[in-house]
View 1 (cartoon, rainbow, N blue to C red):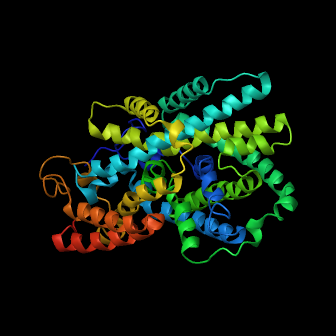
View 2 (cartoon, rainbow, N blue to C red):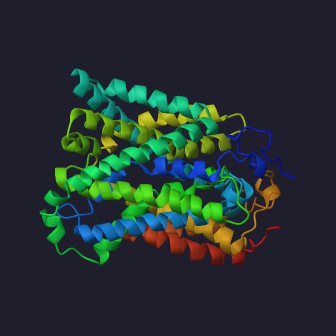
View 3 (cartoon, rainbow, N blue to C red):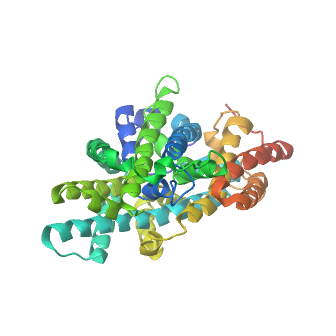
Length: 446
């Protein structure tokens, strides 16, 4: 029998036993609230509406609210292996990609996480710089960027419990600050109603679905490795905690940031959330409070979405690589990604779309593997047997069913980058099911 992480550290890749789960529902939900406050999501809302995007305000609201709810459902569906059996994403994908092939899936997931770690940390440095500029008239964004990076890394080195503690408390605080910013948006309401984006005809066709797709693409990476979080969620008698934890944890906070991007962007004409907040703040004090909101949001999203996945992926490369080493390597690579360039890139939508060409298919494969091919069963012994000839060794450690499904799904997705995941996910889902059954991968014990 595979060893279960009852006595082991929660950062290890071994499965977490039911009685060693560290996050009850009341703690799990605010962790996701905090994680969803990603300031770069602000840009998705901004580029959705006229004159920067194809939609009017009503259409953008509908598209982005739908994308938020869809994300909650997607997270819930892919969270089952982690929630039910306590396995992390790096182990979950061994059943579909093979013992060695799983590393392909973890690397693909880790690269955008590291890029977002850099982007979010740069945004935090900008916020710190703005605070000191307003209070004392001086600042140095490069210094604050490095300071903020050290803060993020320091919290992550504290492990899952430290991350949970910060995100749980931070989640409730961020909700309070979100309420303040929402009131400010409502105060702006009368002036905003005169903007052309309200009367613009827009479209309910391709442009609408492109915005919906972009809304999902922005956090589809989190849906991919959601088992890294759901394995820590205290289980209920049924699956209620899994669905409540992700629907309530994902949709509200994510929808809020998308909508904030619409209204703040419309009022300021900028896709940079830090600049928009400074411009619209009614006073210096309020501006600083809102910038603190940006700081807390970046730390929360970094800990949950951008540090956890690559750290686990690096651990999976070798037994000698620990959680702390994984965190430090991820941080160094995030600096090398040049976030100061990515943060202001005009190709933001295309960046998300192109990468979703690979992420959508992987989610399609993992969903097909769990729900159809594996019939909702997870064989822990097989997942943790990494020796040659093990049940998930397949062909020299690789599953060609998954690799072929990934390649075809990604290639087809490139035909329409704006809605790439909407194409790649179902295509890879179907192809994987066909190939898996043809090759004979129906092989799990209860």
